[in-house]
Image 1 (cartoon, rainbow, N blue to C red):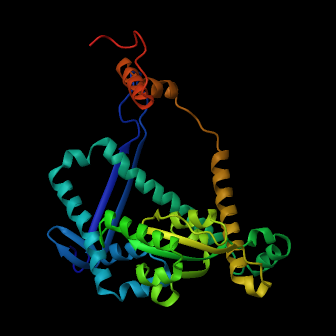
Image 2: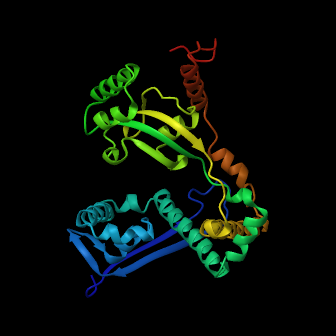
Length: 337
């Protein structure tokens, strides 16, 4: 450490041609470096988690959710633990496996990650330079002439019973419980009553298992698929999701009507901004693709030769395909064992 700052430096030199072909050609060298200095938060052995590390971690959390996240000491502790472990292991790797870390393929993978980050940064900076301060005029235009772009997503009203599986109970016990609920439905018991008694949805005490105006695309993927296929008034068979086992009764599925511009303003502004951002991105990519590519002499032929499959590779491929298709071997296709 330097004073109260933890310092980390990573330099990645790379020769793009990792193994020179038979004919000598010029090698292209590229070097990228990443160096950080930041106050340490926690140290464990050689591992150090800094304020910058935590700031980078927080970027994955929506900005409006960050205050709630940092107000929970357990979440902070879990985040610091998840950040510490790879840093400990990375230090051990650099100390114990110097040759492995300097392997050209490994260096190339690290540099590739930096290149992708730099490309993303260029896109972000280009957008920041071109975005408008106010998108309301564009939003009004969309509302007037492109209402199809403002079409609201499908909504649904439904009641469901959830029986959790996994940590709460075994899969077999969960299946027995949901089947019991399904059999009780056959005895003319109402799903809301069964939800109150059997459902493990945390909101069941307030809503008796009923959800209204739920955006279908925001539901668990398995639940969404069932809600899309049911008819109004139809009850599903038991089905599995990541949460556990469900039974769903669909009451209605609909697409809300578009409101006035004032009612739809925020959404229209967001769509207008996103459309402009996509246009900026496409223009950047288009300009990059307009530059003519120049291939090194024999580069494609060298690549084909470098990764050319061997006879044993082709034979193994044939065996794998036959295994998948469960077909007998082609006569004479293999040498006798």
